[in-house]
Length: 151
Image (cartoon, rainbow, N blue to C red; front, side, top):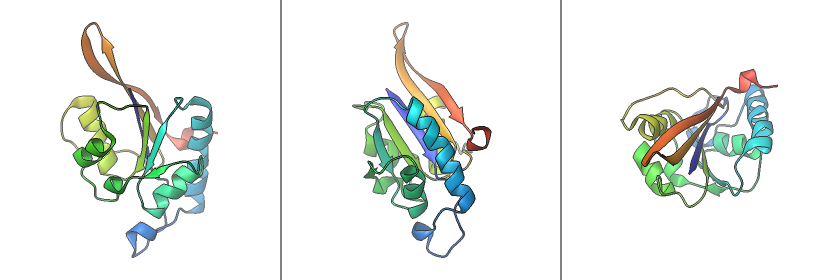
């Protein structure tokens, strides 16, 4: 099953963390990844998003069809987010739009099976695939996209 992690794009500074909007640069970053997702996203993709404004604006560069995932709010525990979406027994491919260090922690757990604080750049997309191979379950990193490298 597929799990996609999309870190929110660049946001403005502000006192109210949940209300911080994207910068103009952040909107451009999100649109680059959105264009790529439009062509490559798996069918029947479940789209989950942190309730933070910057995460919602990132995902809305691509679609208005998503569900808020309160467990993915800033400061969320990676294991809590994975439990909320049902990893590793996902019913369908799932995208989470969220924050650091949570997404980096999820990436470390999913790929390496250990707690760590991997760094995911703003608006980057990581795509994992969990599959059966030679009688073993494995998770592979399928794609890592940096919006600055996309046109």
